[in-house]
Length: 72
Image (cartoon, rainbow, N blue to C red; front, top):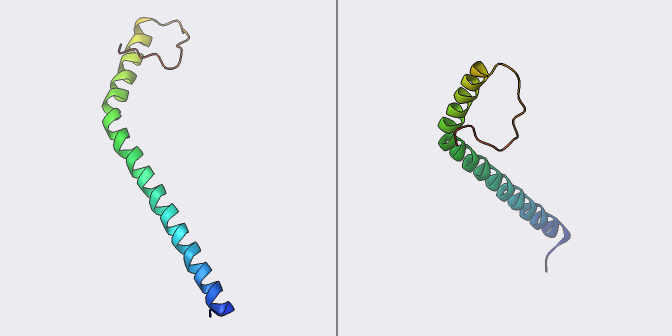
């Protein structure tokens, strides 16, 4: 039969395992996001350069809808 102290210890260990799994998943998600950012970084940089060039060519401010790419 399990004593009360053993049951509490068992619960605490199980909770620590769950917390460690959550941290590991969170770290993995962040690493995955960083990996995809590295792939998209050159496109994002090129889009920024093209936007600045377009601003020089067309000095009056014009509303750009979000989501539309200048590159396309």
